[in-house]
Image (tube, helix red, strand yellow):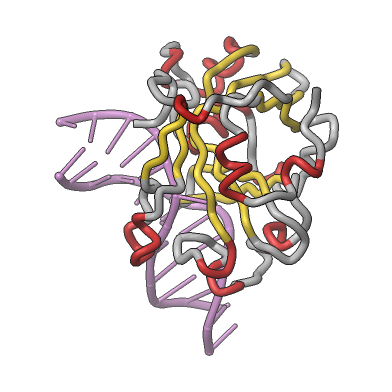
Length: 194
DNA sequence: TGACCGATGAAT
DNA sequence: TTCATCGGTCAT
């Protein structure tokens, strides 16, 4: 069953945790690509110095974060990698969850081709990697995740005792916000980033 | 119009 | 731990 708008339009930290175990699906001409979410990071609007929307910075890039929840925010990093985020909270609240790692489920042959590697554990174990594997590019920016092309499938909640929270990755520039425990992983899962 | 730089990845 | 890398962002 597809996740609906009201799943996304809630507290970002709650959504980041509850996204663990859900399935990300991308329907492409070549294959239907699917992976289970095993690692997320929350980015919370105006007050989060690590967020692109810090202090309410509103630009062409961040515009989609200000819209309703359940839309894709895809941006280019380091001039060569894409990162896929899910916009959370409601209209006017620029918050999002970065998807950092997936456990490949289907379309694995195509993922291997997209990533030019045969190593299963290396296919989606990082934000740039999973975008390459899943065929997600800036063309998907602003796409409605309640549509039929790029969406999420429900799955049972991961029990609290199987979730681990840690500080976020590569946000050393963010002052005290760099230590917020807003990265969530499924404890013991072998497909998380390093 | 252009100076600046990053929510990474891969090799070591 | 280090380092290559370059399109895009944002302020002008």
